[in-house]
Length: 306
Ligand code: GYE
Image (cartoon, rainbow, N blue to C red):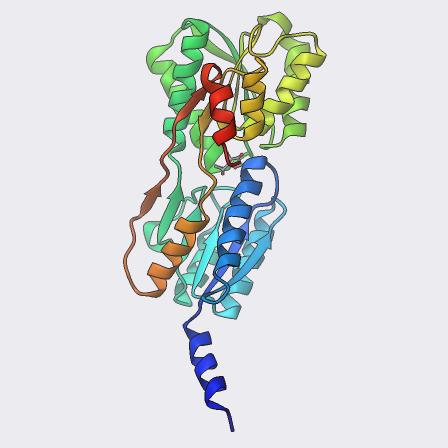
């Protein structure tokens, strides 16, 4: 026979919120900050949250496997940062059939509305438009740009590109993207691709637009090694707002970062709890973000938490 204490603790156990989260991997400082935010929150709430974390090492197939195992475990909510936008219909349908809501975190998936409950994250189109406006100011509306794209097929890459391109087409006819290639959101790949851009286009390059700061930090290394002055000879705008790019701005080697907030842990779990309670949530829980420029970087850097 069970003691009263055991019975009570079992009942409480059933009340715990069980969440599985399929993370993309560790490609950037931004993502490490997001993972830390999520794990910190879960760690602070071990009494009420049972949290399972999977790192997919940038592979969609690993994320699909993780989701299937969360379904098997019967978690209350599944969180996913989809590495790419497409290819989710089958596994999301499995979750739906099992009655488990899917929460998309930081990147979108292209599926019908009934297959996910909410997207918590940024407006990447606006980020791309802001990046174009910032580069226009730095270039006096005229110049040749090379672009470092994020992971092929990722919503953050697709939309940061679209917002940027649309803005150039609408407002800046004398600003041209002369080359664009993926750097997979990593510093190493950003450096490698920038090296090849510099070899091919050399002095023709007036600016770099990178879909994240990590790739820009790699590109800055490449420019310095090639004897160029990033932030001066070649202007820079990238997305995220990680500490490293603020330091580069303080050092005069970068110009602008378009912020994207990775500290999504609290919002994520609060949303999961609401779903477990049967409450409805907004279809898009939008992040609040700004743009940061070199002129205030020294003042801003100490306040940055990621
Ligand atoms: O900008 C990049 C990361 O999905 C918004 O992914 C996120 C992006 C972020 O690796 O640094």
